[in-house]
Length: 189
Image (cartoon, rainbow, N blue to C red):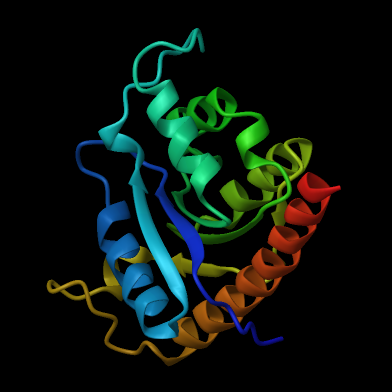
């Protein structure tokens, strides 16, 4: 599946907000793959830059986050695995946005210990399904993430992960084109 994407706006969401997080390193690697892929207008959405209240009362940066999600045609979520699950603040951010997620595709890049974040991804799939988000099958996982990247944020042996990222991006972009056309046809009707 290869996408002939043009001007797809992709939100790259960094899902961890911890002070000592590794997410920005992984996200920088993903950003390089996205930029190399081409045909994508990238918006990096670092949740650490947002103040979303736990009570989801619309205060804080909720409106700003909703606007960024609404403007995107597709998403890639970079998520760690914390205690066999995804970060709580990521769930708060997801729940702060409702209609803006609908009918858009999403891919995952996960990282962590032995499971490489795969348990967090499997828990996030039904959360996004409830919001009518299409999650793509292919994903990128980094088990033992701290040993995979060098001090400069590079992968010494990147081939397998680069193939996985290209496949995931192709799927996200294919769905982005199809769903954007469908959203436009519904609005025009």
